Image (tube, rainbow, N blue to C red):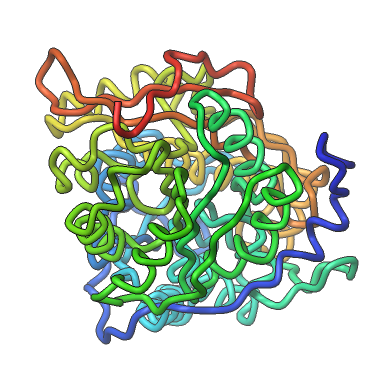
Length: 438
């Protein structure tokens, strides 16, 4: 399939060269275990592992975990009936601490000590890729999300145009083409000189974006100013800021871990760069209110993408809950603004339950993995159908673009609005993009 700018899917895939990156922290938090409240034999109990970043630089992704896990556990309390047998379900969740080494250790503990039948994992390559690799090596079915699919697929060793090397690991998430669609529908809403400064780290996300998205934006008529890959944890961005100011950029785009963006953006304000920015487009950070509120007034009018929202007209097949009810329930329980991670995290349990049922035997790991090849399931992020993705093992999902605005009423300081829906017309548009310095 070719996109409207003339870049073929094959060419897009060839450009998605990625690497690995992350932080170094040791130790794994003790697992949190929940089981359906009935006694059963081990061969009649399904054990599900769940790994996400509750602490560390990516902890914003884990903020809604207690709420989402509570909904999933309630839905699974009566067990799952598969092939005439009713299985109790046990969920064991662990904190990956936003770190590849800890994520890998957590996965191996769940595989070899807890003997999980199915693994679910989410949020950033630093967490998801090591967990997926551990499952692939051990022959344990794994379903993952919230990593650009190129960073998950190619970042783990798959090659463009070659058969998938993965038998047990499956993924659903947005990709480079979705960012391209979002940006080229969002950015024209504000008049700019089309000069884009990019800050891309030397990690799986940054390398995937540099290899695939940057060439697409150039072909679409944007001039890219790229000062080169930087290391996670950099403290001084004076050189990059100086280069951006001299180049006269009016659009800024970045894919950093949250602490790095906060450091960069404050320095950019101190050194006068933010005054010339018309669009500040951020990804990987700025997804959650806690991250944006921490910036104070510098967070107002930041543009981003949202891979889930309460206005999306879908619901969870496992729990039956609508997206509007999902967000409202979270706010009522936590007293916090809705968090876009809720949708895909709950979707993992929708997909997991559907795969276990479709397998005919949830204790047969190969059967569960094989069921994923053509699985079709309704989730909060939309209807997912494996076997029709851009590459094997992957379903591509949208990430419509929008913006954080200063709230003028209500209990919260910020509100999110969707400003474009190029990849899913079912998502309602709520506002036109405002300039960063409106």
